[in-house]
Amino acid sequence: MNNKTRFSIEIFGAASIVASLIFVGIQLIQDRTVARGAQFDNRAAAGIQMHISRFENDAYIQDVVDRWEHGAARRWFNEDVQAFQDRMGISDKGLYRLNLSVRMSAINFDNNFYQYQLGLMDEEDWLSIRANQKRTLQSPLNRAVYQTMDGMRPQAKLEVSRIISELETTN
Image (cartoon, rainbow, N blue to C red; front, top):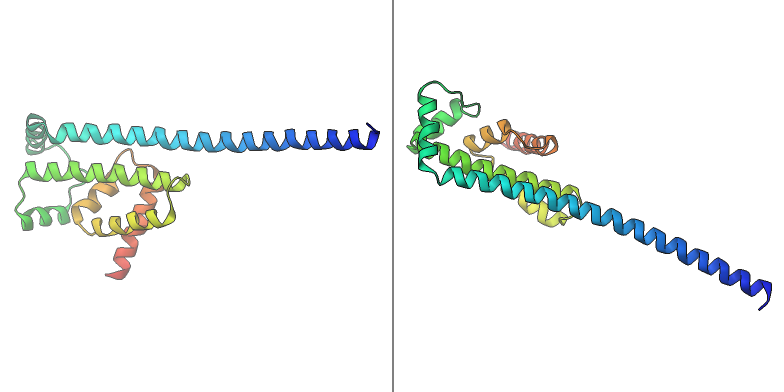
């Protein structure tokens, strides 16, 4: 084998190794992104499950309402929520159950937004979810809960603020 052929084979071999390493690097980045998405999804599912447990526990609901009656603060409760409760004829227990449902929705929204930001959700799917969220945030209770929700990522809270601004601009 002459030197020119050997050199060509060595260059081809080196290029193959470099290409393989680049592919492995890209795969590791993608695997890490998917793992981060799955990890966040699992935490979101655990948060939702916690709220389901509270939703189904009548004694817990009664305890919360009793604390409200003794002056415990409800950061999400405002005049618009009070008017909503009065207009709909919802009891305090019913209002707290609605609050828990909205919290589950907010956790799900945060998770969906994170999956979209990671590139794990198509833009068309995200835009559909966002449009649905925009309809959801027309309710004063939903707005109040989303805006005071602990544990929601700052990026998701910013997206909620953008949606609310869009609603206020169109109204």
